[in-house]
Length: 84
Image 1 (tube, one colour):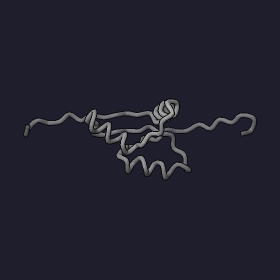
Image 2: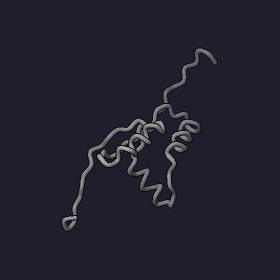
Image 3: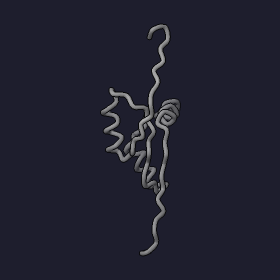
Image 4: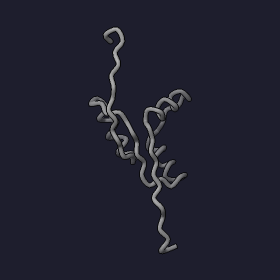
């Protein structure tokens, strides 16, 4: 099939919704396998993961990037109740 151009396919994933859904199902998500699943099943070329940026999560961000995700950082909000 030379000359046939593959259309680029993108995934836009909200990490908080993904995290809550996976956790509520009682699962733990392997992001490396998930990225491969997206590629193999849906031919996703680029997977964008929208995630809150917090300084203490640098190792997580590096892991996600190595797994093949492009991170889009969102501002985070901190809510306190009774001084906590």
